Image (cartoon, one colour):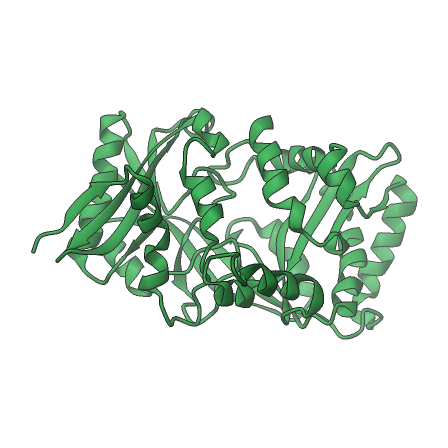
Length: 380
């Protein structure tokens, strides 16, 4: 039977869209389910603040009476205006190993883009950079990190067979946490941290939950994220409404021991490092649902019995301070905390392969690239 593509229109359709990957990847040890409520908040325009500047449509593919694929078509007008291009994005893309299915899904996104005057299709991308993005092209035998995607090896083969080309690659690194921060190899970091504090009168600030959630510090952190991430590929500046939503959604459940800010004497943020004990195994046990027992697995993993790794979610240095060595203060505070927490590894989020500055500090550790993910594009 031919592939049938239907647009998501009802709550039942949306539930099918959200849960399809859980069936597609059932039994796969590397796939980490997303929480259903979080996906709904992202995909429902009434709940997602990006609807101020994004248009979207969700599609499901059916064959022989069964769901066989899904995709989101997204036009981010804010990003298009910033980067001076006319692109439609495809995201949330999953499909069985059937070229007819992947071709039909992407064709629907292309049609959506053309109908809105777009000239190129790119992805996987979400509404903003806080949505999972990039297709895994290497590292299929590694478990996904919490905020990124996993996909089967046949995905990129389908894209390439359909004429899609590489736009940009990201790399993820696995870093071995040292057993002893007093090791001579870290003497330079300790020395630079001490010199920077003395020369520039800056210091480490450990924020409290109240400061982040109720006293405006979360908003200040996101202002710095906008400033430091602004020049990176297709970045969308966060609006105040988006910031308020993300502070509540993401910063509210983070263990503040692993959040470090570098500030000046007036408490202005100059650099930040936000990390999170890995909860990927907990999310696998939860199966995408907090109830009835998912919340227990997640909280236990975060605060009681950590997994072996900690995820380096976000880090950045004010561009005006990037040549001062201020990054050393982040390491000087966080690495001893990782050691005390019993973590064996740190896992980076996706880092642009061209962004040499961000990967340079890993050279002081035992580290290795473990995954590569790619954005594929095609002219319409």
